[in-house]
Amino acid sequence: MELSCTFDDDHQKDGEVDETDSTIGVGGPELQDSMQPSEGPQEDDERTISITDVSPFIRCTICTGFFIEATTITECLHTSTPQPCTVKPGKQRRGLHAQSVFRIPPELDVSLLLEFVGGLVFDTMYGNLLKVDAYGNILVCVHGFNFMRGPEIREQYPNKFIQRDDTERFYILNTLFNLPETYLFACLVDFFTNCPRYTSCETGFKDGDLFMSYKSMFQDVRDAVDWVHYKGSLKEKTVENLEKYVVKDGKLPLLLSRMNEVAKVFLATNSDFKYTDPGTAHRLWQSYFDLILVDARKPLFFGEGTVLRQVDTTTGRLKIGTYTGPLQHGIVYSGGSSDIVCDLLGAKGKDIVYIGDHIFGDILKSKKRQGWRTFLVIPELAQELHVWTDKSSLFEELQNLDIFLAELYKHLDSSSNERPDISSIQRRIKKVTHDMDMCYGMMGSLFRSGSRQTLFASQVMRYADLYAASFINLLYYPFSYLFRAAHVLMPHESTVEHAHVDINDSESPMATRNRNSVDMKDSEYKRHQLTRSISEIKPPNLFPQTPQEITHCHDEDDDEEEEEEEE
Image (tube, rainbow, N blue to C red):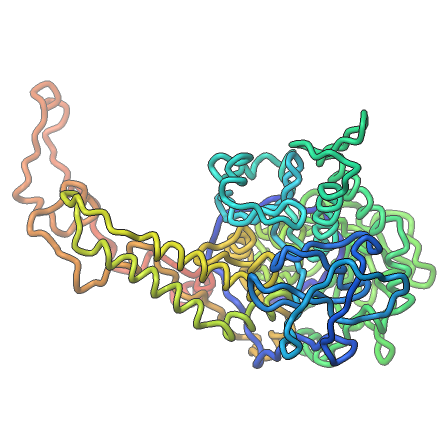
């Protein structure tokens, strides 16, 4: 079996995906604590600042006070509600006068991480950032930096539900590239909401006769972000300072070399050759790949694609004409399609393991259109696993609350008039769920809210065969390793024990699949008098015989073994 891989971190247009399927998470060596100590003075002394001297400012969701954006001056430190906060000293700035003071005990040093997770949905009508589950049910709703409560949410979303198919209104922010614009949406909405010059309306803001809708704000931000990626100086600035922006991993060359020994490896990137070319100094980066494609234009790459052309690696320009020859090692190509990749590598869809970090442009399209095996890289997974293991007591408490809730109804049935008081348990479940979310950050976990999975989690489960914080984890597995998803129980399988299932002697009228229990000799074959003359020959069996050999292949990778057995 040929193994072909692709690696990419390019900006792509986003889209929509849905529902769930079996997926495997690939783990590496023991994860290190990803939380880094903050820079600046070690003493947590109090400081007075003038809020009016700083713009824009951010509202603290813990103490509801104002504090400075972390990237400009300081951090907001907090303990727990309702204790107030203090501003931790950072870079000194002139012209700060006493107006608003935040206090915290000096011995406590907990930084508030203002991080928005991926997978959020922006409502272009009301300007809200939504965290939803796989079916569109709203888990969290934020307007600017104001977390809306249940009654407020129901005013705009009566059923706490959105139609995700309405792509004109709802935009999914799925990727790492979307995180800056997600934060920018929140900053803009919060700024205009709190600015006395503007009047807040249901769908935007007014300043006299001028009206700015949330939709126009959204489009302006989207256009600006696209301009930065496609026409701005982002790539030039990145190339000028590779030491700052490119993370070096000594295990990467080793993994690529090992892959190249047992399989064919290809690179597909949406970037042009000039941006892709700056690579390793000790070895020509092209030597790690059997096929290199730049200007791939994913996700179009997985459909009709574009013309395949050769790149002059000396000038970076494209050669005239369409390339129609065989695969040549060391040649850089531009454009092409996934079908061309299969032809050049001599591989079928399921022979290819495709590695990418874009759930829509990489994983969904390659899975739905080509049937490729998919490996999704989720860098946030490292922090998710850290919280999952460090705060396991909260997850266990939530499970115990569910068990205790079920116990209250254990001896009740439809004839019972008793109504157990579950209000205290519900409040505790909400409190534990909130505490769990706050362990991850401002918007909670990327994958769940309490016991409910997010939209992003459902996308991962459906379209990614493998996922991990880094594809370097493959270094710790043999290339012959058979990845199998953990057995996922359905609710009726996980809540009922086999020993407690009562089997009635009388056969259920709906149990048509239990064919072996039907005695065909005792069954009467009744027909109407008019149909009796058509045929007097009774079939030997009403049902076909139950197969005595294996006919249901649960793993398509077993096909080759079956063919060998037949030979």
